[in-house]
Length: 198
Picture 1: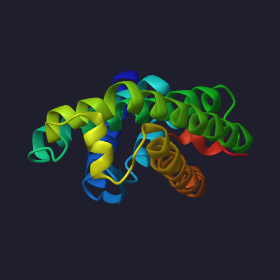
Picture 2: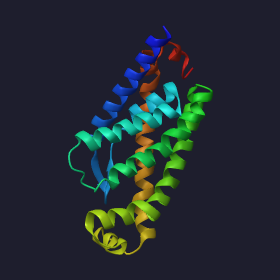
Picture 3: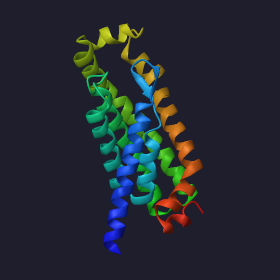
Picture 4: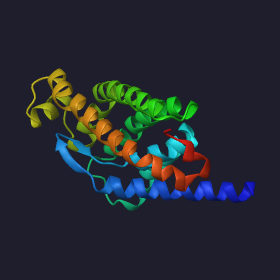
């Protein structure tokens, strides 16, 4: 029985990773280099059902599948790195808070905290790692030149006008959809999860 449950869990993790990959492929550009997708929903479903480590695992599966099957990267793989790091910053705190007491209130608190952590992480990573790396590897230009390319004369304006609103939108959209569907999905994943969101 224990072995069967382990195999079932691994199968679910694989399926959720593949679904997250497909949803990542369906991304669309919102502003500048930022693309909106709903790939965090399967990741969060797994993380809510089985814990933060499983969430990180599904996030990694999603990115690996994208690198292997998604064709040439249109961001010199900086986008994939950003998706993984910022996704993890959302999934881990949200699922950690929810997993202790599986109630709808804890889910909302977890998602709210995850959103705040994601926004802060997104700002810091974009300033110190992602944007400079993207400018250098993909465009072969300086960060200032990249900002000018997108119509901004300062990094501060770019962060305030694009990065922060984008991450709020992405976290908010994924959170709302998750809250709407998780109760039903969790029953399928694990029978004991039928008590979730009471």
